[in-house]
Image 1: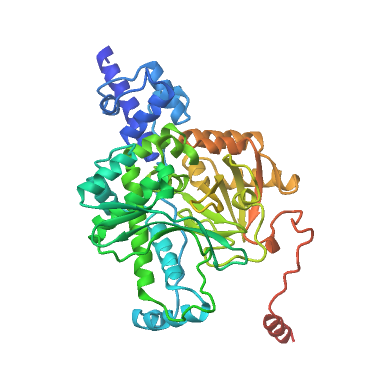
Image 2: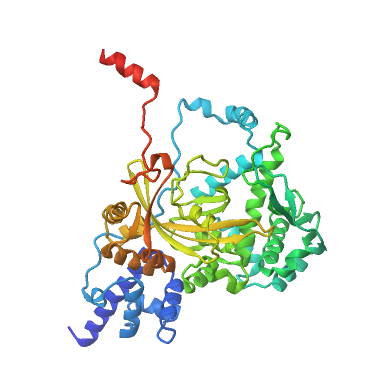
Length: 517
């Protein structure tokens, strides 16, 4: 073999391996280029040069190969062994919250459900809007919070500009013939639906056919002002500015439950408006944080929830948008208000929840990061590695939480997290063994403990591959065993002191006694 042939063969295998790693970790050429530049701006390759490397037309320099090896946590020698992995890395998203087959099927026909659902909502005190939120959440989770049609509509209007300033959104509004007016209105106490009064603020509203009214309070908060304007731009684009939507507010009712004095009838407009709110919010986020540039921005900032401060984006928008643009799809997020109500929840990784946005359980596990942060006064982000037991199922999660205040001044906690098992499996690491190691350490520590060295090394490596900085931060702290209900605490030392007895239902015990004769 000539030297030239040897070089071509070497280039081919190097390129094939790099391309395989990139695709199996669901990265685009742009993503990999950004990651390389993030490590070494001088040696980082352009997109076109990376493409030539992958196609065997160029051989990466020694420094560039070191950078790529660092990104994918490989030894540089791995790239020269001329052998590809036997199994491809599994990048397919895990099933989110699974449904269940319901029998007999005819009872769940469309006609019967349309008759039964209004009665169900009326009898349980659930509003049409709250029911719509459950349906929308299921729709999000089924689609892993990715809605390309809305993305494209936002990109046509914003031309993928990032970052976008208030003046840019105002210019778009004027181009669409929208008039912006201001009003003065302060925060007030809402009677709400909890024992404690809650602050409420009307931020803005749309008046058909082309007027936006914005609370002057938002002038001092560009991030919130941009989002409100972008949200109404969305209404103009998606719904032709027909005005069929509710004002944008902060605070108010926490659970969305109906008060005793409210009408029992379910208003169909509530469901329509809830869907339109979702569409417009998604559009606004895609306009202010277009997929490709925002994905690269997150990569440069290691997916920190608070990185939006650099480009005048709210923490809420950043947290929700992560799940839509990240190459890794196994995400969840919460927006929680004291003492533990969820205003928003997304479970793209199927995380079992002890509570939801329609109820608050009497004995939630207080070791969840979001609950611990609710009881904290710190405003700094905090990372946590958690082992979650749900029956015989064991999960491993990492999240970052931050305490904040909404536009009405109400304290709340934002929490974004990922399921670590698929990432471990993609690196040919048995997630069950890693989880067992961490859980055993936590049990020795009474429920929380430092992560053993080998598992800590694995998690740190996963954090670097996914480029999520708070995974490595969480691995350096004590891990925590969490569960769905304190009464079912899976810790060796029950967190309530003594586990309550688990008794079978009386009917089952009678049946078993009779059969035992």
